[in-house]
View 1: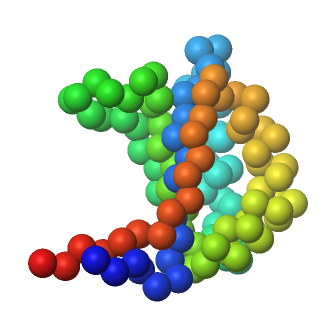
View 2: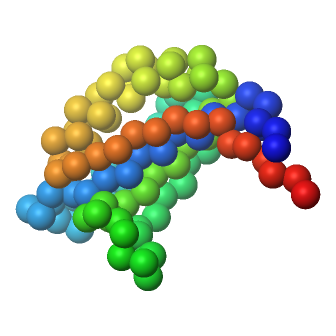
Length: 109
């Protein structure tokens, strides 16, 4: 196994509060995706809803994945004013959240 060179994935797993409307969730997701245009170290953004048949989601409903070229890029992103402003909108809308940064490991057989 070898760690992917430089690539870092930033994963946010969340559950929106019950009183947050679907329209507001859509607005927040679009604003999250737009951070790619505002923060140079952020290279890509994807998101999705839980669709697991295993029912092990523990109430978490949304997954957001951003890609960076380095851990320094993640640190720059976290401190960037556009991210700080966005986090101040998103976090109060979430009932619970997990954030994980990792370097993908490639498995070769």
